[in-house]
Length: 91
Image (cartoon, rainbow, N blue to C red; front, side):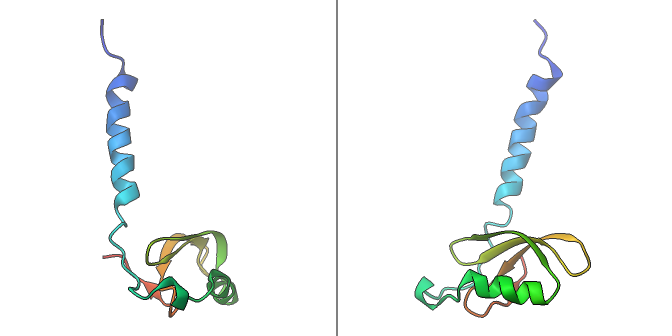
């Protein structure tokens, strides 16, 4: 019985997808306790005023993660310090 291409490719795709999902797990935005974080709605309002189109926002252990279109219309995933609301670059 010959293995189908799908059976050979599926494990590779799952491995690549898992690696991509954890690729930005190293982003560290703040060590401050969550009681000091500004509300995510404040970041949302700030970004909208700057011309961003927010698709989705998530809270990680130390960041606000934003999926949006930037003012130039480019789809972007960005991380923000929840205390300062400043953008944090991935390392």
